[in-house]
Image (cartoon, rainbow, N blue to C red; front, top):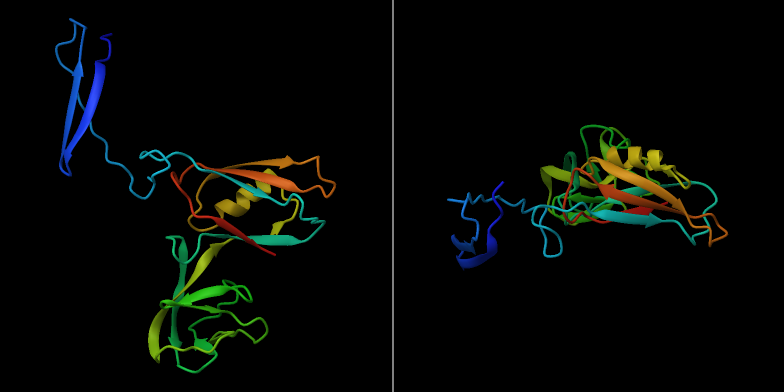
Amino acid sequence: LPSPPDSPSLTILDKNCLHVSWSSSDSASHAYKVERFLINSAASSSSLSFFGDQEVVEMSSVGLGLTGGTFSLYFGDFRSNTVVYLGSVRVMKGHDFVVTDSDMSPLILRGEAVMIGDEMYHIHTANPISSSRLPLFETYSGKDAEHVPLFSRSKSSPISYDASAEEMKNALEQMQHVSHVDVRREIDDSYTDDGFKWIVTFLTNVGDQPDFFAET
């Protein structure tokens, strides 16, 4: 096979033009093929490869003294592209609830933050949720309107405090926007509370990923 070119060089001339040069000592090579690849702008960042490296995230309960119970994970915040559209609601200024077309209780947790239009509110921790009413902790301060979009963050089902690697993997992959991941669990023997570390590698989504947030 021909040898690769020597001393390749790339110069950016302007936003539409690149200058590529190289030298060659291989007399058997008469021409070289130059290929270009479009980057994934969503995956690229200043700290990672333009072609999208796999991000690795460590989640740990070491040192927290957990001996039972469950926790839930949120993926990203309302500034990221991982928000989940729940439907539209009718809002009325000065009211502590919004009107819905269906029961939102299977989709939303008590106390959870939601985005109503462009403003953040929290679901009331005690007032009842019905098929037509979603109670808010705060009073709605915007204008009366119909068909206002309601968003939540991507969240997991409850995860056991000592979840296995497979259980954590299943919980994460069921979350919207996470897609396929690999999970490895470690036990830190230096702590007496038997805390765990879960090492999560994103397999499908590449490049920088939103943060995970835990809530008990």
